Image 1 (cartoon, rainbow, N blue to C red):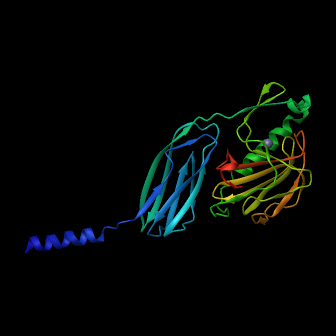
Image 2: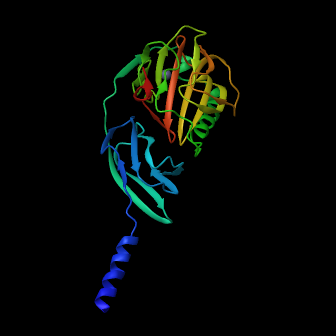
Length: 279
Ligand SMILES: [Zn+2]
């Protein structure tokens, strides 16, 4: 009799143990400067999902049961082993899944440019301005909005060809400079520049290097940045839809000719936009 009761209790216990059909797919390695996807599939609806990657921790809105994707990336200077952690809140208990992702070195080409000397070595009187510009841009790119505005396929901002790809190691008048943090598209002055995906304008400004600039916050740590514009057509804090005009191609700031510099950032790190653009 006692054995029977114990057996029943045991059965009830196992019956009550929740079984979650939850699967997470991540790449085991990525190249530096590359974005990547985290694919989650689940039959349940967790109350919350927390993601920790590259010293940033953030919650993502739950779009389950079914399938959900999270966009992450590895900065150009982030080679090595990194841990990705996902914490699912399931009926009040948390289930953590951790992954080791190896960020591999990747060769990017060199580019040698000749520019007027004052643009290569900026005069002393603009050093403060450059430092202020950098801080403003860095701060805009580190905003972390929980909502997701981005769509999976980013649309190209201008129709032109790429004149300088992402990651290129630049030499200005023979001096090494930091790697190219975006993609340059050729385009005649005045070509409309369109938002790659939905987002909120977090910063507009006129900077020493970038010239007239727009930065969009696409939510969940994803940003896009548009530089060297001849004009800016949006104001800070407004929402823009994918394909909406944010400005026009120009050559303001440090530019040798009219082009659009497009940057895409994941948690403040520049990644190659070409992986995400639907071209
Ligand atoms: Zn550029």
